[in-house]
Length: 494
Image 1 (tube, helix red, strand yellow):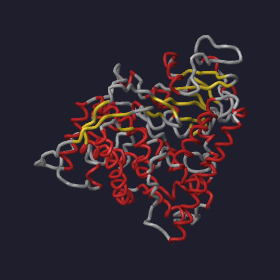
Image 2 (tube, rainbow, N blue to C red):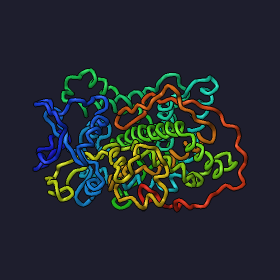
Image 3 (cartoon, rainbow, N blue to C red):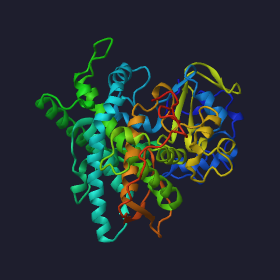
Image 4 (cartoon, one colour):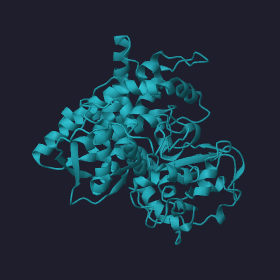
């Protein structure tokens, strides 16, 4: 059974039928034009080879898919499951058998999933809402100071601080105080270090040569573990918290078996949530703010909705966030262009043939490129590169084939915290639109970098403080676009 470090020849009997880039070099493979810094983006340029293609890097061959038909087939949970390989396997040094990095056969995945799923219910989200508001207040206080100083704001840096504060507070009752520091917090530095090292392992054929980087990574992991152990120890000494995720990890037995998470697995789950919670939503918020600043007519429509729906309420209630239909479409369209999970790795559970055409042995795997899937002109039109929230009008969502929009993964291993992330993103964008006019920094051009996710590198925007809007005569709107319970990403979700 091939794993993430082995070549596709082992699992694809008719690999030669799949096209590859021209000018393949013996031994080196398809490295002409490849980028070690942005391997995903450099791979996307081969979309012209067709909806399935292969690339060889030194002695290893990888199969990529992105077409709508192929994506729908490889999403079939009866024949395919999540593959742990490449960068995800590299993160197991931190996450072990936590939710994101566990193999399907590891029992702690199902145990943690069943124990923690109620932590993302509607009732739990209502508890987290005030904590999200408090963290966003710290952000706006910081932005007010930046506005008074007359300079642009560091969007990605500030969104990283915000989302880490939110997941730390809502999940574990911890306050890093990131907006009060005048230098990067060592926890953030260590977290970015581990993600960067995992990306390095994903893209280099000779990881053993970087002994200095390996030592730094070991030190980063040790610091992360000590920090989390301190958080857990303080919670145990306090006798419990406010019913957050950490309380659930420590105190909640499995509803059927009564089994509990081990101390080691609790640590791994905390690190997984901290890493995923800040590195994903921070990128989504940053890209969204870029597009809102660059498209004033879209920002104006979103701002009008916030003023109309929230009215003169000083602090929006939990239920008011879901009523921001157009803001939700802004988030959805942002995730279309720059999805949270830019690559989904899928593995054959049995001998099969992808779309009945490409034989795969049990254990064979492929990389589904969601940024290309979300740009498929046959699904999204010839203007698929254009930012247009109208693509998520209810009629347009219903007209699209299934499995053509995958920002949170697919199947049983889809992101457990997707509703948390969507509520967080809509709340933060609503609060920022309500308070500021967003203007692009004239000297900035969108540059996308890669960590484990995609981020807008060096993004800065300028702010103007809004004048207090007039109190609207109506604070609710009819749900003509989308029923409140319908999620265009996962239609069965509430």
